[in-house]
Image (cartoon, rainbow, N blue to C red):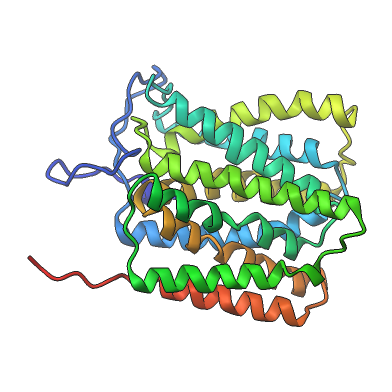
Length: 332
């Protein structure tokens, strides 16, 4: 996460959106720093970078799983991500304990988006190609849009509805019955895991948008990652046995990318954007991640493309483009 992403907010600025207010109870590790939220341009740049890196992360994870088992890999991912963010915030004097209003978000993100989503995705990817795994994991609009409209009264314009419809059509094309081997129980279970992971992340997108934490996404991220790693490590020990990493150069290369880059940076950038953008728009924009992951997987892992992959990815790209165009509002 670059320093510009947390540049101080001027006193005369408008109040920050929900989830980006001032933090409380700083740890006495040095002088406190002034905080703020990234502006629209910086937020868009950070989100765009996170989308590209997270897309590339799926084939990297697929490679990493040849060096370490999925639950141990997930635990290491969040342990290294938390260590990086704790060190970075400590050096800057900005390490803070979460306040009472922050703990619900720490729990939901740490348990659902980080621990559950990542663990289910890693286990499922041992049975499915990386490209398809990425697509299925990001079916969040299917869960987010109805909840945002019916439960939170979110208004969606015609252009965004069209974009959501196109993106959903793309997902359905990729999940057509002929793309799944219904006779293979392991494959069906892997698909169910990815749908469950998608639903878990959808609930977090809604919580970040409509919740009321006092601290920023950046300040809460290391605590969320620490919670995820603290639960995943004993789970990995119980399910997979002693640590399974082979310690080779390939193992360390994958871990460096997946931990500090795809975890420490990307989770901060994406969760900060989730607190600023409408939930329906955020869930649709994040469909760019699996499209990127699919493209990188085809190029790097030589996963064979198929007509449904091409058509589905094309519909998702068009849907994202339609959703990303801001609606024009008459000036009052």
